[in-house]
Each structure stands twice: as C-alpha cells, then as structure tokens.
Image (cartoon, rainbow, N blue to C red; front, side):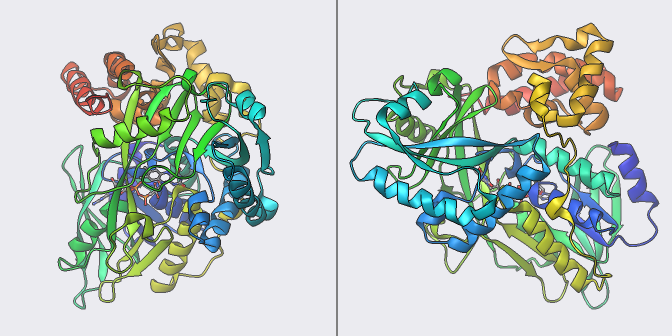
Length: 522
Ligand SMILES: Cc1cc2nc3c(=O)[nH]c(=O)nc-3n(C[C@H](O)[C@H](O)[C@H](O)COP(=O)(O)OP(=O)(O)OC[C@H]3O[C@@H](n4cnc5c(N)ncnc54)[C@H](O)[C@@H]3O)c2cc1C
C-alpha cells in the first residue's frame, strides 16, 4: 500500500465510486474489504491513521460478551460467538484462544458462573473454542500462580478469543487494497456535495499532509466514524439529533509477573457492577476496563486518575502481588460509540448492537455501535444497505470465509514476528539485509528498525505515532520506552519517507506529547 498511489487514483477517477466510506476503524475498514471483495469500486478516507480511534484501544477480546449474557441478550451473544469463530478461521495469525478463570471467593460463585459459562458454550455451538469447567482451588493456583489465594475456593474456566486490534485493522486495509479498494489515511471529510434535491453526490475532503482539497463523488456514502458519527452527520444536517452516547473505557498495562501463567482473569462483578479483565497480551498484561460517559469525543482521550485507581483497586483484590501506580507501564483510553436508545443515562443499558441509519433526504448511511468482534457482520449489513440505496448490482457477501492479509496457520514459528503472519519472512529479510535494522529500538522493546522500514514501505505509516502506537504496539507495551525510542524510529522513518531533519525533530516532539498521556501519572 502506497499513499501517493492511493491519492493519485482518487484524483484520476472520472466516474463516481460505488461506495465512499468515511472512517478507517474496524467498521470502515471491514466495509471497504466487504465492498471490494464483492467487486465494487470503493474508496475509504480516514482523517488520521487507520485505527487511530477506538479500534486500537479495545480490550483485545474477540468475544461473545459474557456481560451481555448476564443482561439476557442471547441473540447478540450468539451472533458475536459465530463471528468469533469466523475471525479465528480467517485470521489465525492474529486471533487465538485464551483460557479465562473466574475465581470464586464465595461458595455460590462457582455453581453460579459455572452454569452461566455452560450457556456460553451452548450458544457458541460449532463455533466453540473449548468447553468450560469447574476448577479446584489448586487448579486455579496452577493456572495463575500469582493469584490472591487468601479466601480462594476454586473457579470456573472458560475460553474466549484474543487478538491484536490495530494489527487486524492494518491487515484489513491490506486485504481491501488487494481486492481493488482504495484507502487513504490523513484525509479528512469536511463536507458533502449534493444535488438540487439535497441528495448526497459525494464528499469534500482535505489531505491533511498537503492541504489539497479533494472532491470525491460516490453513488453511496457511508459514515463509519464510530464515536465521531454525529459530527459527520452534522456536516450533512446541522440540526441532526445525536445518536451516539460516547463512553470512555480505560486500561492499564502491567508487567507479566503480575499475572503469571497463560490464563486471564475475568471479574464478573466489579464494585460498580461491571465486568473486568486481566489478560496476558504479547509480553504484558492488559487490565480493564471502565465505562464512563463523556461529553467530548477526541482522538486522544485522557485516562482519568479515578478510572486508573479504580482498575488498580479492583485488580489488587485478585493479585497476590499488589500493583501500584509506579508499576503501570502504559495506560490508554478509548471511546465506545454506543448508540442511544431512548434517553440514555446508564451506559451499560445502551445498545451494544450495531445500528444503521439512513438520512431521509441526503441518503447518508451511518453505521455505528457493535464491537470489534462483529465488524464483519456490520460491514456486510451496511454494504447491503448501500447496494439497495444506490441501486448497485446485487452481489453476495463473500467475507464469511475469506483469508485476511497475513493469513498463516502456524505463525508461531515466526517467534517475535508472529503477528505479521505471512509478512514475517519479508521483515526477516529486511533484518538480514542490514544488520543495523535487526537491532531492537530499545532494550525494553522487542521492535527493530526493520519493522519501521516495513511499516513505512508497505503499511502506509506516516508518523512516529503510527509506527510506535499501531504498526507495532510499543506505546501500549511501555510508554516511557516508546518515548525513548522515538528519535531512532523518526530517523528511520524520515529516511524512508524522504523527509528532512526538521520533520524528524517535529515528529519526536509530537510523539513525546502524545505518549506522555500514556504515562501514569501523566
Ligand atoms: C475501552 C474499550 C474496550 C473495547 N473492547 C472491545 C473488545 O475487547 N472486543 C470487541 O469486540 N470490541 C471492543 N470494543 C469495541 C470496539 O473497539 C469498537 O466497537 C470498534 O473499535 C469501533 O470501531 P469504529 O470503526 O466504528 O470506530 P473507530 O475505530 O473510532 O473509527 C472511526 C474512525 O473515523 C475517523 N473519522 C472521524 N471523523 C472523520 C472524518 N471527518 N473524515 C475521515 N475520517 C474520520 C476517525 O479518525 C476514526 O479512525 C471496545 C471499545 C472500547 C472503547
């Protein structure tokens, strides 16, 4: 994928595109891949980097949602479990199963959660990841040696999926591109072009790197901007009533020693009645999340200290070695694009399903809600809507069984580079070609110069943040180490993108500013 080529094909296009997609998160990228693989002409415009928004800030679970089961939302759970199974089949290099333990410290917990997890197994049917079971006290300690043993009675084990969200996003972009799609980052939609009757004919967009204005005509326009959806709807209709109730979720990242073993902990009922997880991810542990309604939607939401303290306090009830603020390697926040039902209020009661809204006059199609796990189904539904509305030739969705870029059945053999899947060999090639590129960027980060080269050459990385936050996950693994590796990453990137010393310096400064928010306290 090359950004200049993408822009050139947008400029050269004479005909209207079949679909113009606004937003390059899970929903937009999934929709671009769906449309391209059906043979439609599709262009996707992302204002920042792919997955810069919510889609790089999830809990990294491919799951049915045990919490929705508690709420009795069986159809939502069943659909997500089916999608979980398909995603494992289509992207085995990025999705794998993890054993979760629900520890019991009260006599009723094991039978209660044991029955709940049996229902979860049943709903998964043939897409199941493994059967849940009762685990003795000894079994729990064997699975999680670092668990708090005082008062521990036993637990329930169940299985769910885990993935790398930003890596899946970039692989979806690559798949969409390979299917003929055009996708460009750092292009912001700033307005719509309409005919005399008020129907949308295209979008006005700005290349945020050059300032160039682009006019992109489309037979249908899809607003897949997640928590930003209302802002884009208001470009079409300034008086549009809001449909999104944004809610912030925070995670903290700790060293693996806090959660030894390969199992995760699921806390089904926190002090404020929510679900919380502590999950081994790459070489760290991700703990979260919270659910705090917010008024403002930003690309870099700030974790609030109360949220971080709440996570620490809850986690420490289950960890033998309590974590303190100084143990936090990184903390990150994301905004859920929850769709309002009625007057909202408690975010846990908002719709977790996805919603498609078509503006009656302009025909703008907005898709929002859902979750990462169900991105494929959301994409299928919204492309079906676009086909009907724009009177495109109906063509069946083919993504149920469709290998995603990087597909590899045994990616573990690539060791440290396993999450690149089939691309790993090319990165190994870059490391072999130049020994300096095989050196880690930082003693505490397993990232090499070759990965920066790869991100710039093949994955459309444009900034140090793109490389350290999403193409690699350095910023989430260890924010301080990421800040310290920024100058080296900037130097390699600058060479790759043919920039000068002042660009390099500005990149380091910009990244340091962003990354300082991931330190705790900031
Ligand atoms: C804390 C948290 C934890 C979660 N954990 C999980 C989980 O474990 N598993 C799971 O399945 N789901 C999870 N989710 C849900 C999941 O992450 C989201 O549902 C999903 O990422 C939303 O994707 P999206 O594409 O709709 O939105 P986004 O990822 O936010 O993408 C929208 C994009 O639109 C772009 N955009 C906005 N305005 C414009 C414009 N004018 N022009 C061009 N581009 C624009 C933005 O820059 C952004 O990149 C979690 C969510 C949160 C907040």
